[in-house]
Image (cartoon, rainbow, N blue to C red; front, side):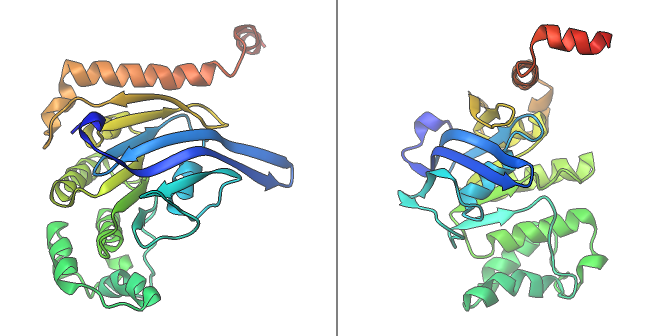
Length: 272
């Protein structure tokens, strides 16, 4: 599925700018970022460390307000947490005193609504956590905790799922397994997904488009279409097409970092 085949923006970021007021002065984190995420699309955001990827994602979720600009969901401003937007964080953030079932039920308790146990049980089965409802987070591996966090985020059927480097702490094998799992769930639900990752391979495997951000203040430097049909197998990751696209994106990220420093200054620092 390509952006051209999709019909309308689900999530729209328009001129997003965020300034943090710190003790040492104002910090411009993102500057006039604009991005349309189409309905049913998976978009991955990559860029240098500290470029504002997480700030942009949290702004999309309504958890961080913008200094200027706006985020629209189905044409309506996002001004705070929204039940249509699910979030998976870098860490699972499971409450240690609650078992798995109680952690998944937590968002429903906050909203005062009844959990859809049929849907939740289906998700638990899909991610391999069937029968673990009475286990506490300390009894689950890191991969199992992230699976639980994914179930919790999808349990109330959000139309948009935001994922902030959710698999970065996992080993390579578990990370690949989680990537396949996300694609499988997407194939069934067609949930709109925005993913932040430091892994270009992960971005290419999962997404329809890869957004490359510049160093802070973060701006959208380039956007790449990922021209591979779904479902995708891990075998595509060893193809020349993926190799070439990976190198292009990597060169852009390195290039944006180097462009922050005059060449003479870099050479002088190296000599010093």
